[in-house]
Image 1 (cartoon, chains in turn purple, red):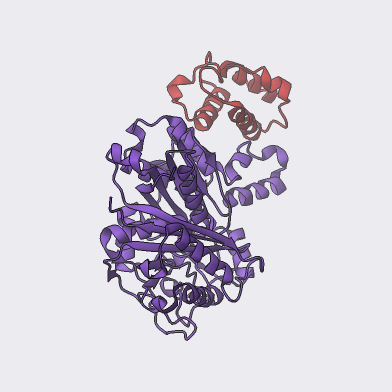
Image 2 (image 1 turned 90 degrees about the horizontal axis):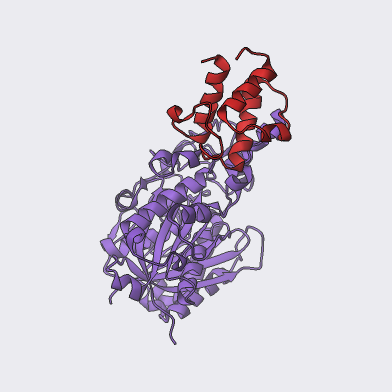
Length: 414
Length: 82
């Protein structure tokens, strides 16, 4: 018996360039930057003082009042994006057996803000002043937990943490769960809220972040020769995946079909990618094989493209190894040039971006692309969005720990 | 309303996100106001903090069923007139 086809029926995005799918797409199409000075705390002592913070996000719009103080911001973002995706496709009234609806929303780090605040309380006031909600607030699985509680979804419920590959692993594994018949519907994606003093300190000590403090809107510049590190973002990307036949029967909107998922490990270094891009290459090849597509049949690649010197050149090498001559004809863009790097949420929002590219027939650009780097010599869709007649998008994510996860989504054509 | 009573009710409203009109002295904190076990821990912490009570022993906290029980307990502990 062949496994069921899986389609995307709901989209939700909480991003630094737009909250809600329409605003997110407008930002992508316009080439808007989410970069600015950090406002959440005094960052004057840090070498990096810029980030892509959310603008105008109010948890009261999305999270029941009693839950706001007892959930970390990464859970707020997940609940907001899930509500967008679930309500858009009418999942609440779709008549599913609740046991057939699961949730798999990952987070790379979990409740970092909560940990930091609580440590201060512990030192200053002692253990009896620590909130009883500390543990449920900080554990990374709570996004999946809270979304299931909110809607009564009683199917599979877990989380995944694979650093910056989290979002794609979540969506890929949710896709497999539906293929295996463990659920008919999965609410899935990634969420992250790590623009905190400790997060910033950790990433800057790794020398991974851009220090272009005087020009935050132009600091995230993937594939440009002048790139000097990533710019932290935050938010969530959550989608509803649904078994095709069930979705069709209830007349759900269909944004695309998940056709490929590939994953691998570098087995090389804690944080550095393998220099020849072997792991990235393997994951892309596995995703193509899963989709039963040849490289030439991919029409757009949403790159991991973090804007770090190392990632972008190694990813380019890996893309060339996978796509051969087609690599030079394939539009490759990094939406992180606009959103910043949403870490565990990156795969989620970038998968949403791919679905929106198919739907709106346009490819979001790589902004801030000025000076070509000889090591990055592909078509990066520089600076302005481009018309798109293609049907197949690939989306790459790679995480610290050497995790690689790649998804392929195709325009739904019946 | 005494200042202790007002403050206790304010804490309950804030922590349990309940309507102030529902917080009357005869209401049971768990049964009527919907507090779960974590809410109760948080309420005790907040009482200790707000009234400068060193440590409310768990067995004493467990005896505080109604809003009125809490007000009486805190009044005794702090020596404030009810």
